[in-house]
Structure formats: structure tokens, C-alpha cells
Length: 394
Image (cartoon, rainbow, N blue to C red; front, side, top):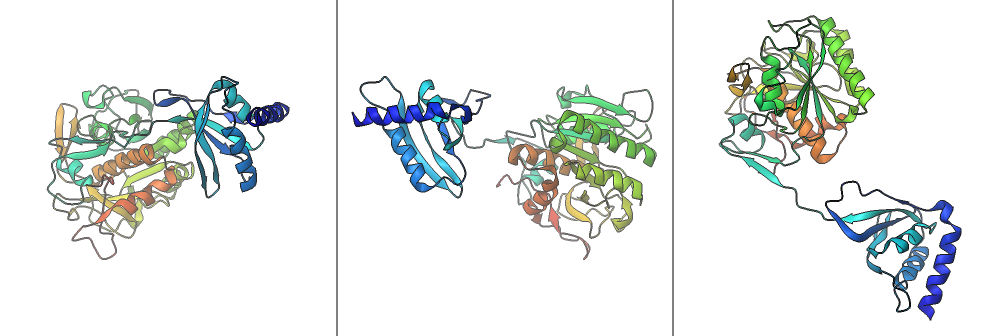
């Protein structure tokens, strides 16, 4: 009888507060939802006494006189997150939602250990960024692999039909000519390196081609500014600014305007990776690598040395593989060297971390530096020794 009275009192009070009912969050993808199982989160600042009173009432829901499915399993009180989990039928969960002490309710789900994928006989570069020591031959990465992240590739264009890209590359804008093709191959190589099925770092990321350089690999700074600006506007229009990477494997002498364009992308919430250049000089006066907030990437070799051609200096965030890198070309796989491809590795890892860790774009470069390993043996005194690492744990 006591249980019946308790339930009746609780339900009557709940009906009075229905106008302020807590939100029952949509399950979305239901593949991992546990049937009739819920997590109930209480409103901020709810006292322990009020919480205990609520859970006591919930525990009394199940009785022999009503066909009620109600079983409180666990309670938690974790530094501001107070609530409980249990099994409840639809009618009961609606009544729980009507209690003003409840903030929101969501479906309980199955959690799985993150699945690591190992690509056998991977290029030395992919193996290197997923292992703390040299000599590995496999590329180890989480199966999320950059899914849901777009990379705005500001370059020579992309052969969007290249098999290594698996249909995940599209044209965005062309500021050079009326030919939506890659007459040089530089952009296609980078797209393969960043997101290719075989050669890529973030194998499920999408590539958006923005053409600002011609078939000779050259273009005006005004084109570069237009390309970056297009990426910013596109991301804003589509609500993906914090899920967008901008790759800038290009540059030259200092330009305040180019730097400002790159900084605008950072301020918009994007992760921007830029090559420091290959003139074996301090990169502090090179654009866009010297722009504030941009992740400036130098090139390393297979034996963890700074590449002799790579620029250097205090602006360098990390080194990444940039010598003898294999990826897709216009006529099959090719091997190239340059800081362009070091930046491509960083863009791939940036996309990977955005998908895996759900961090914001302005946090990615810092996170890359946190994960990186200090192994570069001959970097100049004013340059970091950090080498890009994806945090695989290997």
C-alpha cells in the first residue's frame, strides 16, 4: 500500500509540472541503444536530500498492482553531474520527465572500445606518425579515421575521380581558370596523402578542392586570399567551421594580407596547417606559415632528421615526414619531397583528431604539439624537436 500511495503522489505532482517537462533526447542512430534503458540527469544544484527523495520514489514505482516496468540500476553524483540509470517503460519515463528536478533524459547505449586499424606495408611516413619509434611497417589508426571532417585544399586543384580518394573529393571553387582539373598534380598528391584510402592519413575525411595555383604550381597571393576566404564562407554557410581543416601547402615572402586571411580562418574555428617552405631559412618572414594561430609544419626525413631543404625557426609547431613520400599522382603513385607534404600529414592528423576527440579547430595545433614526440636530432637551436604523432599508443 505504501508503494502505491508513493507512486500516486509522485504521478500527481508530475502531472502538475508537465508544462516544464524535461527533454527526452532523441536516440538518433539506434543501433547501439539498449531497449527501455535510460540515463536520467538531474537539474544543476539539486540538493542531496531532494535527489534521494526522488530516487526513493522511483524505486517504489514497481509494485504488484501495476504492470510497471521500472528498475533503478545505478546512481551517480560526479562533480555537478547528478543522476541515475535504469529500465523504464514509456509511460514511466514520461512521468519521470515531468518531475521539475529532472534536467534531461537520454537513452542508454552500448559502449565499445575504440577500434584500432592496422594498415600493413604502409609507407614509411604513415608508419612513422603512428609509432613512437622508427622501423615500423604498419599504419595504426582509430577506425573513425577523420569521418565527418572536411579538408579545404587550397592548391592546384584535385583529380576528384582519382581511385585513392574513393569518391570523397569534390570541387569547391576555381580562381585560376575555367578548367576544374589539376594540371600540376600537386593538389591531387596532397589529397591522396591527407585522405586517400591507401596513402592517406585520415582515410574517411572529405576533400574540397579550391584551385588557386596553375599548372606550373604558381599563383597570385590575391588568388590565395580568395581561396581561403571561400573556405571560410563555405564552412560558415554549411555550419561546419569547427569540422573544417584548411591545408595551405603553398606560400612565399611575407604578406600581411595573406596572413590576415589565414588568421580569419583560424578565428572562424578552423584548423589551418601551413608548410613553412623549402629554402633552408628561418620561416618567420614567410606567409602564410607565419600567421598567428596557423600550425606551421617543417619537414623531416626517414631517420628523424630535419630535411636539409626545410625552413625552420620558432614558428614551427612540429616536424612531419616530408622526404620521399608516396601518394597518388595523375598517372599512378609517385614519390615526392617537400614541406608541402609535411603540412599534408598535419592536416590529416588534424582531421583525424577532430573526428576522434571531438575537439574544436582552435585546439588542434595545441593537441598536435601535446601528442608529438621530441625525436628530431638536428633541428636548429631555435626550432622544436617535436615530430608529428597521431597518439595511437604504439
